[in-house]
Length: 127
Image 1 (spheres, rainbow, N blue to C red):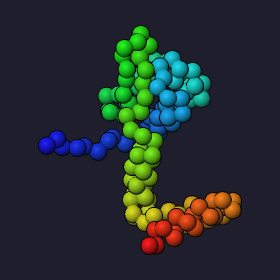
Image 2: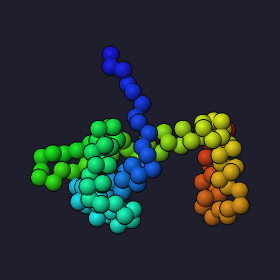
Image 3: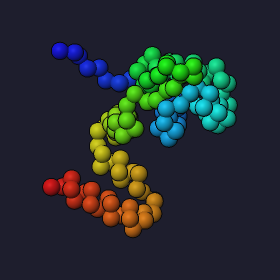
């Protein structure tokens, strides 16, 4: 039986690359650089090195069948978001999702749709 290891936590820069790849789909380093390099003032080689590191860490997968290798996230966006949020809630709010929600909603106006969605979610969680 294989031992499953938790996925490594991405750095802030790596999350930026993941966000872009979730938006674009499988992409070459050149395509990622065209978007990320401009926003973050990174050179092509810095983007390449970052993506290679992410591949080594298991955050990305790569197709080498074409000349320009294609990269994509190794995990679904929702799975990565849950893992990062869970870690954040544990570290900052001592595991209390309620405290997180209260803090997130303080001083913010919610649309009627957001209110209905949150109300439905809370009703479901109380069952």
